[in-house]
Image 1 (cartoon, rainbow, N blue to C red):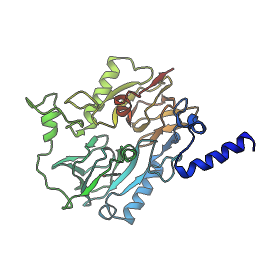
Image 2: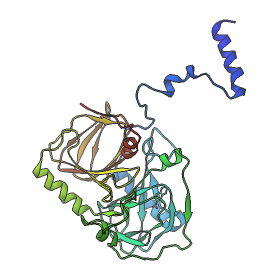
Image 3: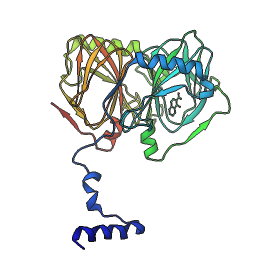
Image 4: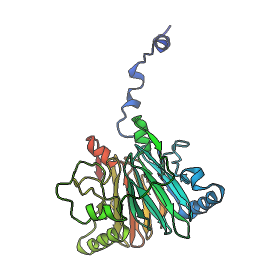
Length: 342
Ligand code: 1HN
């Protein structure tokens, strides 16, 4: 036997003992730099919306529990993942429907894409949903959605499902009632926590922002005023993150959310970070180049997935606004965030 054959026979002896040689996997186990399985991708609204309406005539929100088309990254088929760590789906609710109340340990965000008249209820408080609103469902809070209007309402769901599943920390429960009853006024959380004020001596330990709805009109106005006050950052454009007023940290413990503005004609310099990112176009149109390409033309309600450690740039063809969410808070908290600006 030569050395290679002796090694192979040694490895075969190890296998039934549940032992394995590190030296044959070390470089793959600890790569020189991140190797995402996810690929850069973009889903276009004009492809997604008609398919969502078809789902609307095939299954009710109640039967489906949630009538959602999952954005499946082509590099992660069948995994219900938009990137290596993030989940994204597009949810449809029709007039008079109810998506029944449940809770889970995964944190969820909604970003409203289309229509008016729907609401989401979180722990006894309803909030109305309008296009561009960013709404939080904190982990382990009861939530249901309903619709009192007349047209289809569509939003993006962003969740930390792959992260929570990786940690095997997922729990879920159904509520005994289809829709939870209201125990708070509409707007109560915003009044208590979202007016630049806080109740005196309030408990500030919540890792999720108690302001569970961030209406678009206010966020947009802030970005547009700043665009007149300062030059866009070469890598980020004009970018504001959504924060938890209790501690100034991200609004959600695992998902970092932001709104970004790029004036017409502005091009960003290449930027990459270990975070993986989902970009949603709210207004305008831009070319988004990810890694060595592809370049996607991204317009209203189109959604792009940017895998970790892939450099990306934006070339704004019009005044453009993007909403984004990423796993950045997790990288930061674990000391793993690495960035590169070219
Ligand atoms: C969920 O609870 C909702 O409440 C949407 O609308 C999508 C995807 C995975 C797990 C839970 C919702 C979800 C979800």
